[in-house]
Length: 106
Image (cartoon, rainbow, N blue to C red; front, top):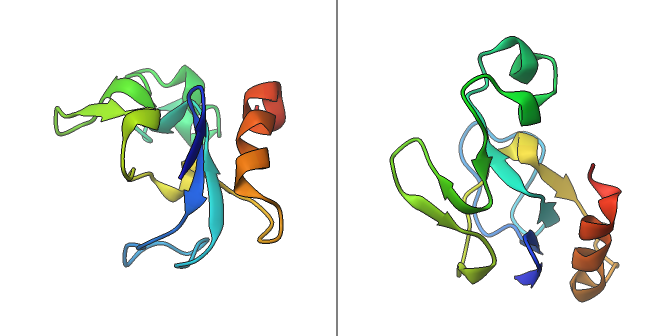
């Protein structure tokens, strides 16, 4: 896993039963948040950053189970697939993280 500030890139190690957009081995990135309530008008409209119950930030956020996210200080991270973005397999992960901070996922 490579990190640049709060953005994270890495390789998918496991996927849940309901995951449809990613598979083990995919190169992915995660931005500044990794979850939301998913049931308000903003979440349903793809504007999770405005979630009426708040988002779970990648670093120092509080998950629904009460645990604190550790962002770039984590050994691994669990993320809902709607907050992951594919990175081309041949693109070096170490070069991808700084691009995220520059706004590629905004």
